[in-house]
Image (cartoon, rainbow, N blue to C red; front, side, top):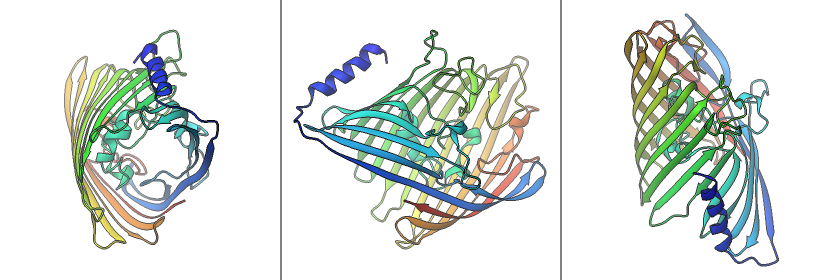
Length: 383
């Protein structure tokens, strides 16, 4: 996407509406609190029990608003903050509105255009096919190091997003996160996705790429900064998903993702990654499902296999992870539920770095062995 595409999108949206003088507006406060107690079988060689906030659904609050401009056009905004319910501290690198901070226009005919810090296309259209991104299980079902961002570890800054209207079940999305520097490609991010839905069947394909991003990036004002997973010369994600949903809320889904990380020097989940790497390549395969025993009682699970190739200047290493996660819960009301969940991960790798250690997202720390189990009992309340 370039400046001419962005200008054209604004013009197309403006030409698609006729605006009367009157307008109506609304603002909504919303959020969630997800609090529970976790058990980790091996955290740096020890068992651990701890209170943890936001494993299934990030504890957060937000404001969103719309203004009816007439003729099918609406102005909109969203500001949303994630926080740690155990101590009140902000998530997303300490940002006040780290989950979302954007403004835009939405047209029935022209689609939606937004500007600000916001999710990219793979998160919006592909991650709902995973047990992590759909909110079925959350952190415990994230693939190793959340290498494909299915668990929403990061959101790009400085981003323009366009989402098309539905056309015969198809919907498209594209985003571009500016580097905000004279080096146009120095820490930029862009993505695109296409989804399709017909009855209970849905599918999506998505693509994302980042140049020179990450917590240790040379351009700290760019699109991908402190909450990015990898610091590397470039990263690209290629994703696909299929899902079948049923009338009672049950579902079964398959998700695949491929992640390429070139010239990596850092990983947000582990500090000791070694040096001299040319590339890290991950292939993730996941099957997940949810079943409602009664309208109030549900259970779900996921099974994932990840194969990775760590290519170095002196040697290459093949690694793999097997991860199984489950959840069961009871809906006390439409907004409040209690649940239990757990996950087991097995890692097989010989890089000689912390990349070899099992590390379930949401655990108390990496395992010193080849296996790790994490369990959780929690209460989730949305408002």
